[in-house]
Length: 506
Image 1 (cartoon, rainbow, N blue to C red):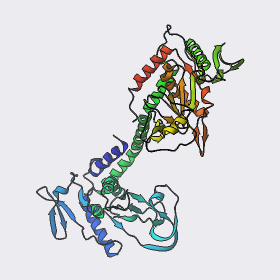
Image 2 (cartoon, rainbow, N blue to C red):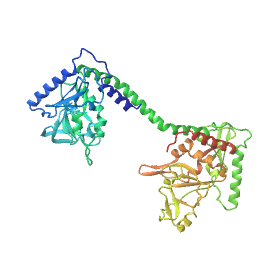
Image 3 (tube, helix red, strand yellow):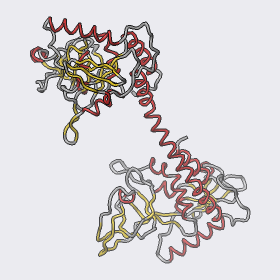
Image 4 (spheres, rainbow, N blue to C red):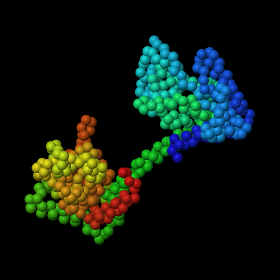
């Protein structure tokens, strides 16, 4: 049960006479109604309120049916009675307890405008010099707009907003109890508005609504009981809010935890028979040398080797050795190795930096919006000519098994290219082609892990009036923990299995 439902349930018990016990010593509501009628007649004679032409008297006949008398007319209203009420209570029309008033216009005063935004503390007051004056603690009710029927207590003297009317409640009732009635029926008023362009409160519904009125003393006990329950409702609401937030973030938090365990070597056990990662990196280095000699890729100016000595980590770049211990975020198993992304790739690039001429039909042209959800999304796919495509692929030609990632705007979100058609990419997308395609899924996992996200947050540039981006020259230096190739496969399989168990975010 949500907090709003709990509150409504309490209000419903209140208006049905089920929230507090009845006291036979209380003066019955029938006596209270007589006092209300007498008081209203006096106010009518004094010209303070208008006479209610539809004032009625509701009673229960000997046949257990309910009847309503208006003037000389009597009609059976048994079918209108929504629920049973205690014997000491009486049925009345809401219009007998309260009324909507226009108020009188006054001038030459400087008072704040009591409109909805000000009353909800959403803006500072606008000062006016004339209008319908409302005094502090008077009741006003919203009669136009989506929340018609909402009642406010004037926080200070002011002028009535154009969408409000004054709300008169006969002083013979306990005002706070009448407000409970109005609060309970708020949804009914809101859902029964009249008018299309500007919906407004159905005044006939408001006046004719059947409500149960308890003895005056019971009204006070009901209000006191609700006030005593409000702290518990507030606590319940806070708990519900926190639980709702947890439910929204829980799958993402669990996913991050799974990925973090995976890249730290804690998700699957190590197998001593696995070929260590150091050997894998040597093989990749040798394969890169072949590609360089064949003229397929350029020589890496920053090729490095990371090793551990005396419990410290060092990086060797050419003849230079640097202590990078402070860069190492966590310990990894002995069979693993730290390396830079540049040591794993044969191609690392981005798309064209110039916006091409789009056409209605042609070669697909992908940008960040096509993969920012973490998967391919072609709902807003753009196209370029074959001639334009032929020029763009001279810079970088995406192929099956490449890794694409968001470089500008939404950052990260690496995915594997599984497309079986040719396409070009914009500058907002980065492309990685590994030397060993068998590592694709694991490297994508690294990119999308908390480690990858932390690196992105530390290295992104921009902000303010500029879009965040990752500079292409910084990406090769990303520090990655690499397990043996066989363990990479086990990690990826385990992660996929676990993530399938989480609620979908779609």
